Image 1 (tube, rainbow, N blue to C red):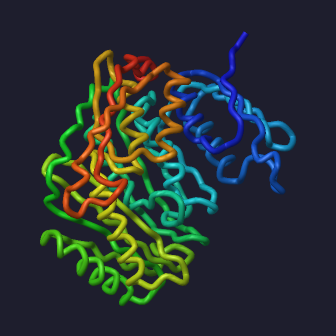
Image 2 (image 1 turned 120 degrees about the vertical axis):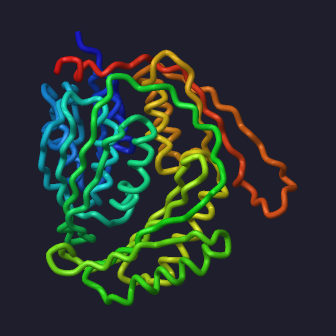
Length: 368
């Protein structure tokens, strides 16, 4: 008799699907928004299930009539060429974060075309995924991972299109990321569609005015789009990321709302970036889950990484890794001198997380 892992609610929906596919363990998710006016799975969650179904062979999903109970039986990750029209309710980052976790363990190389909102709220925009997420992927062994932005599309109308391609891995090598190094440069992308050409220069000038006080090597690309490549809605965004002497990348991005001034967008993003750098670690908060997943799947060797404060998403991910793979991380706190000039409470201390990998092998790839 098949044993199902049971969960309640969809707060960790994507985590559960990722770990179920990689571990091969079926799951049951109950009480999905059962107390809300709109019961069950939302449009973008159903869209994600459809995308997973296209990328796998043998995956079975069963929803009850109200959509409040999901039975998910994982199949094999096949990959290949897929084109998917995503929900406009969430940015493409919602889907790409899942694909990045699964791509390395597929049978065939991923060549996935996604259409929808490239810049929105709540998830990384495509510039962060292209310049930062893929830089982590390449350090993890996915050397041919690429994200091509064919069209940009801001919420709510969307109209964007990206192509994600990635090689597969047979095994994951141990990870030792402990030295964050010194920041040598800051790069960024200021993007706007269907807006005044003066918008981006205002964002760039304000951001550089803050960042140049810390480091002289600051360059922010100006991308002003119009016509077919500009999507269906106006909007602008700013992505900033640092590069260190040890190839550590820390990032931050924001997409403006209709009431946000260009200068406010620049100040918000730069201050968030500086806070992220001050928090320390070799991985920024939005990519902690990715590195921890690869650490858990390495061969039977100890992997270690230095992180800043753990996010609630990361804490939940650690719990789910233990549930699906039996992995337990050792966490060591490296405290800083509390009397250090300029130190702010709650920032600056780092955590060193270590674990012994489960020895995961990509059996899908071995069948090719």
